[in-house]
Image (cartoon, rainbow, N blue to C red; front, side, top):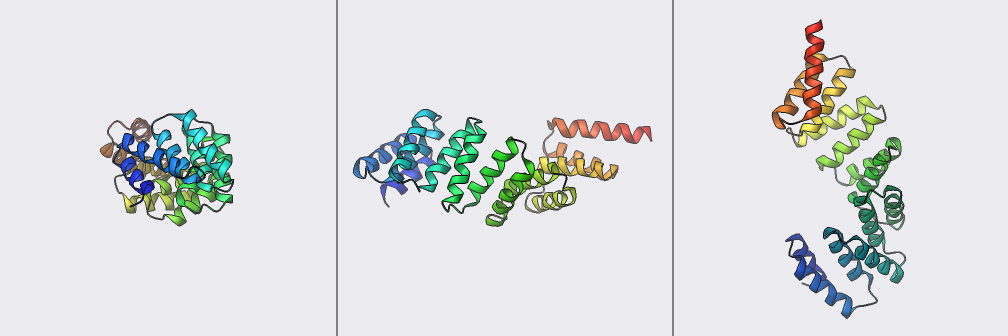
Length: 220
């Protein structure tokens, strides 16, 4: 096992000190290779050492302007700091350079969501679902952007796919409850709000939805 792989395994085990030691050795042994800087940058993001992380990613790009994963790392760094336009620019650059992974499409979709550009988020979230069709969080966010873009029937279909993977996804039940209300199906809405609260009793939005539906039923 090479040092990069070993260090990544240490990162997964949250043994950050050993990971840093090995990444440092990789950089010392191969100072002109961008991979060590990228991996060290990813480690620094996890440790919230944002300024240092940025310098490592930028060094990787200085060594190789087509290092797609360095742009992806910068995108994640800026996303965590809510610097969404800068995150968007770097995720797009990573994709243009050929990074064809669900995560980069997903993160670009989330970045656009956070800028309330829901329709622009859709093709990236769709691509993320194509690359990783069984990831419930990717599917959920895709469904959310569909709903926010007023594609309600498509959103409902996607939310139902989430429940096929995880019947206990409380936010999906809540959103299906909201869609049911739009369709004037009060009983179905109440069922979904109740399910959301069964799974997550402190779900404030579901509690509010249930209260409103029960009030509507009582008035009728």
